[in-house]
Image 1 (cartoon, rainbow, N blue to C red):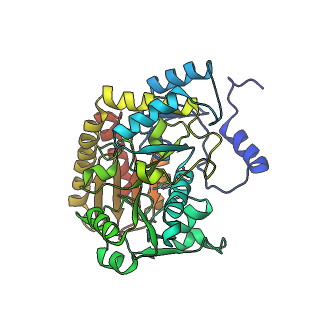
Image 2 (image 1 turned 60 degrees about the vertical axis):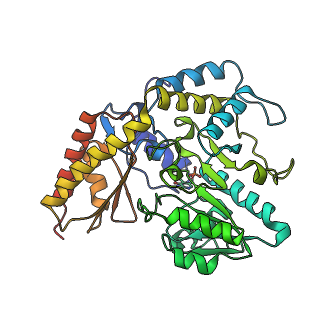
Image 3 (image 1 turned 90 degrees about the vertical axis):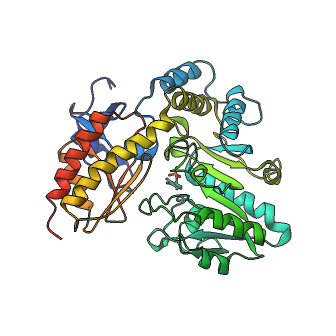
Amino acid sequence: MNPKAHPTSAETIAQFERYVIPNYRRFPVTLVRGEGSLIWDAEGRQYLDFFPGWGCNLIGHCPPRVVEAVREQVGQLIHVPNTWYMESQGQFAQALSERSFGGQCFFCNSGTEANEAAIKLARVHGHAAGRTRIVTAFGGFHGRTYAALTATAQPKYHAGFEPMVPDFSYIPYDDLEAAATVIDHRTAAVMVEPIQGEGGVRIPSPGYLEGLRALCDERGALLILDEVQTGLGRTGRWFGYQLTEAVPDILTCAKALAGGVACGVMMAKTEIAAALKPGLHASTFGGNPIACRAGLATIETIEEDRLLARAESIGARFNCHFESLRSAFPDLVRNIRIRGVMIGLELAVDATPVLSGCLERQLLINVTQGTVIRLLPSLTITDAEIDQGCEILTEVIRHLPPV
Ligand SMILES: *Cc1c(COP(=O)(O)O)cnc(C)c1O
C-alpha cells in the first residue's frame, strides 16, 4: 500500500464499517492533513476548523515547534519506562509546576486517566480518616473509565453500565448552598470543572470556586479541579482557576497539554502527593519522552508567541459576531458564554442541524447538550479566519427553521 496515495473517503468509510467498532458517530469525511486552523480531506477539500482536535489542538494543527521537537525526539528515544529518569519528564513537570501552584506531577495519557489518578490519590490520602466519598457536580464531564465515568453526573453516560463505583455524591453545579449540605467528614474530595465544557460551556457565578475552596477547607476535604478542557491556556490563563482566587489541591489536565500529542497530567500539592507511595499507581506510557518534549514545545510556543493574551482578543471578536446575531435575532440566541477560546453559543432551538449546514460550507464546529454550539478554536487563528467562519456560522443559524 502506498501511503502517499490517499484512499478516497468512501473507501476508508467502507473499511471502517468492516473493521472498526462503531462506537462513534463520525462525519462522512476522511481528514488527511492540517495546518493551523485549516484542515484538508482525502478529496483535497479545505475546511476551516473552529473545533480543532476536540480541543486538543489549542495551538493549531501541526504547530511547527511541536512537530520539530517530536521529530527530533523519535530519533533519540521513543520510550523508556518509569523505572528510569528522563530529562524531558522532569523539565515538563517543573514547567507545569511553575505555571500553576508549585506542586508535583504524575503523567498519564488522557483526561480520564488523570481523573482516575486524582480520585485514587484523594481516597488513599483520606482513607485512614474514613474519607472515601467523592463529590462531583451534575452536568460535569470527567471521562469514560469507571471512576471518571461515575464522577460524570449525567445519567445518559451511566445507562447500561451500572453498577457504578461506590461512594460518589452529586451536587448541582454553581450552587454553594447545595454543596454545603453534602460536603462533610466523610468527603475525600470535591471535583468540578472551573467551566463545564461538555456540559455546555457553563461558566459558574463569580465566587463559586472560592466558595467551594472555603467549604473544603472548613470540612477537611480536598478540592480537585478538572482542567482537562480549560487547561494550558484556553481561558487566557494557563489554568482556568487562575481567573479566580481559588487554588485547588489537585488539578488534572490533558487535551491541549502537549500540542495534540496524547498526554495527561495530575498535579497535586506536594504534601498531598506524598500519599502516592511507590507501587500505588502507575502508567506505562505516562510521561514518555515524546509527549513531554511536545508539551515543552507547546509551552514555549504559547510564551514566545504571546498566545495567552491573544485568547482574550479572539474571544472578544467571536463575541462581537454573536452579539450582532443576537440583536438581529433575539428570539434565536438564548445565551453567549465566552472565556478566551472556550466559546458557547446557546440557541433557543435544536442546534444539531447547524453541524451539517456548516460542514457543507466547509466549517467544522461542535454542538453539545443539543442547543449549545461549542467552539474551541486555536490560539493561532487569524482575525480573517474568525470573520470568515462566523459569517458562515451566522448564515447557517439564520436559516434554521423559525422558533
Ligand atoms: C475530554 C474531557 C475529559 C476526558 O478526557 P479523555 O482524554 O477523553 O479521557 C475529562 N474531563 C473533561 C473536562 C474533558 O473535557
